[in-house]
Image (cartoon, rainbow, N blue to C red):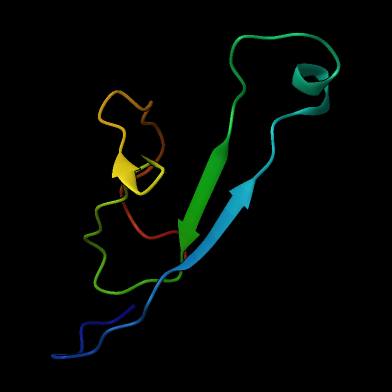
Length: 68
C-alpha cells in the first residue's frame, strides 16, 4: 500500500483447521493456523487466546509484514 496519512484498513482473519493427518488419531496437541492479511498500517499484534485469555506460550511464526 502507498502511504496515506490516516488511512486504516482492518485485517481479514482466517482460522485454518488442523491438517487431516492430525485429526486421524489420538494426539495430545493439534496445529491451528491463523492467517491475518489485508490490513494497514503494516504493524500488527496478533495474540492466541483460550477462553478470552491470552496464551503467552503460543507458537509464533510467519511474516510480520502485510501480505496483501
